[in-house]
Image 1 (cartoon, rainbow over the protein chains, first blue to last red):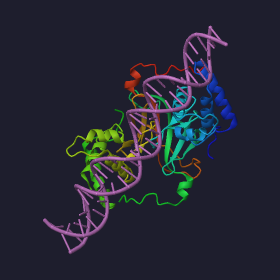
Image 2: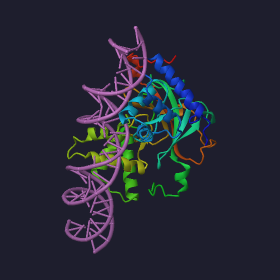
Image 3: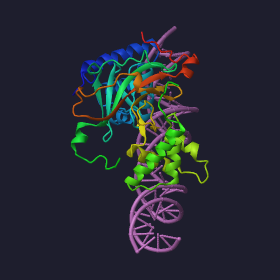
Image 4: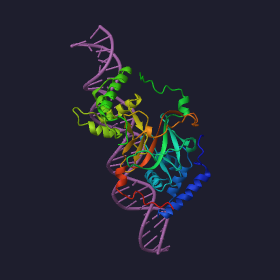
Amino acid sequence: MNNQSPTGSNEFVSAKLKLMEERCRKNRLSLTVQRRAILENLSSRTDHPTADQIYASIQDRITGVSRTTVYRVLETFVQLGLAQKISNPEAKARFDADTSKHHHASCLVCEKVIDIDARQLPDIDLGSVDLGGFKVFDCSVVAVGLCSDCSSMDTAYRSIKFN
Amino acid sequence: MNNQSPTGSNEFVSAKLKLMEERCRKNRLSLTVQRRAILENLSSRTDHPTADQIYASIQDRITGVSRTTVYRVLETFVQLGLAQKISNPEAKARFDADTSKHHHASCLVCEKVIDIDARQLPDIDLGSVDLGGFKVFDCSVVAVGLCSDCSSMDTAYRSIKFN
DNA sequence: TAATATTTGCAATAAGGTGTCAAAAATGAA
DNA sequence: TTCATTTTTGACACCTTATTGCAAATATTA
């Protein structure tokens, strides 16, 4: 793993749950078992899951959690700053409980998304860039290519002739 | 516009069409009116449209082009290196006929995606970064925030309390 | 513990995208 | 040009991802 972020560790998960309780109380949002379960699941994984992937791994718990709720709760987490939707070239939303500055690499074959530690790259300074009035909340690097597993499969990824 | 890329100009469109003819011939792909119409539409716009947006703007032409074809042809263009899918936090694919190195800013409200000229930022060098075997084909910066139109609307974008 | 406010789950529906297959169009050889 | 072959298209069904309305259930607050 090239990822130094604490995402996935037990400490990270419990700190995240604590932060959720705080933010929910401050914003008059209920502390439900569903919200706890979803945040616990998301923050214990490092694979940047989609809503349905989270749903799949939680639904077999006692009582279960509905798919609709997973979608809604994840949206709430993004609003609360507890999670972020990460930019990727696929047509689906991917979530990350690590909201600290870091970057991502997205595999074109298996769609795996791995973290790139922000400390390994110089800061991206958009301060002096002309963005025509665009107000930046966040910015990061997205690399696309083949993960180690997929590139080692030695598949001829493209047989297209360019010249 | 903060975009110096030629995307959208007449010269860009005709050069792109010429390139398509070349690549299609080299790869034994047919030169169809549908492919021409779709590439012409995509390369003449600067708004990074979705497949359905392209479909909507060409279906009223003589004969028309089916939705399925638009989806399929865009995929072909990506394979041929004539277009790219750009990374964004929404759950849909957005296409760009400008395959040169540049970056994007994505508005959280209206979903507009604008270009950021690569020359305004230092190169991102992933050469010395530990990616655990990930093979990078391409990489770019994605900024998320509010475009000038949406931020000037003075809408309280979030009323969430963080502390 | 009761009243109130919020959230959930279900069901329906929208939106984005893919697979199949016969018909149509493009290509290449004669 | 014409014909046989190959490729592509369009129609349609269907899948996946995501959203909405509303009654029932749960959480919060007094």
